[in-house]
Image (tube, rainbow, N blue to C red; front, side):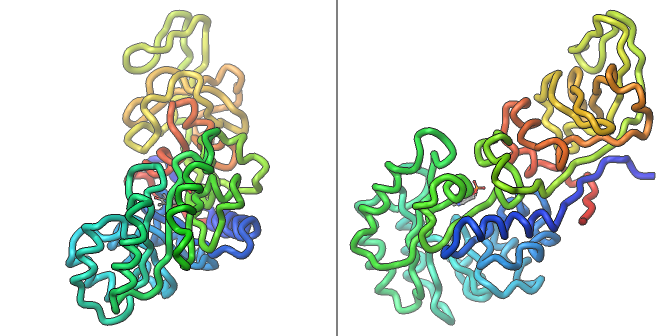
Length: 356
Ligand SMILES: *Cc1c(COP(=O)(O)O)cnc(C)c1O
């Protein structure tokens, strides 16, 4: 028998979440963001569950080629554009749409030889200061791109830094709108948080990522509890040993947890080499045999320990959910000082995946 750990990807949850987003963004087209191997869910196995989307957005040309080879014929957007002039040949061959976020990319585009018009997304730096043309440079960039015979449709794009917090989208929205006023072109602004909480930013195309996978843009599950989204991934394992600790006995590396009364403890086949966060402290929630209990002591490479004081029926072989449909990934992430995004993307290669 293999180690009892496995991840389950729930395809029906992905389809449901996309439909839910569709309802909330009526009129807008949807780029389903599937970068980072579909946020750790496995691009090649999950994209068909999202085929009602209008397009897929990602970063790696290799991931785009995978989608084409597996039969997706609709739009594909490269969110960071290309990195070298020779990438343009693949972009042309596989009919990809590309972001152009800087002068350097624009120059490579100017010298490209393409077999058909290339659709581009001109990215505006409206205040996040990662990628994009400064608002005052947008007009010139637009005119240089528009003058190229091998450029097809141009869409204007920006990305919000604070759609998920109290700073909100207004300063960036104002900067973007001011930069774009004299340009008649489709617009694309909203990430998941803006899809949920800033409907006036939906425009022509939206770019939801994390909500497709049923986790929260804020990292707090309560913030999406009423959004009718379903977790698309569960990480499950089993108890593989029971320890009956006496008062004063310690558990795991560094003896970080010590029993202050006799205590029954379960050892679970899941560790940081599976993608479970090593920094999760004692008290992090774990779902065991239908109830929430607590992680105890340090997470090791292949194992972690849970409290079974209130779970007398738990035995070797008892099922454990590290996160999923009973325990939101955001709750685990929050306890470990991170966000669900990071945990989903970090599920290790060695964890077998079951598709439901
Ligand atoms: C990752 C990404 C998104 C999706 O973000 P979520 O918070 O997961 O919705 C949208 N747009 C761009 C440019 C991105 O890089």
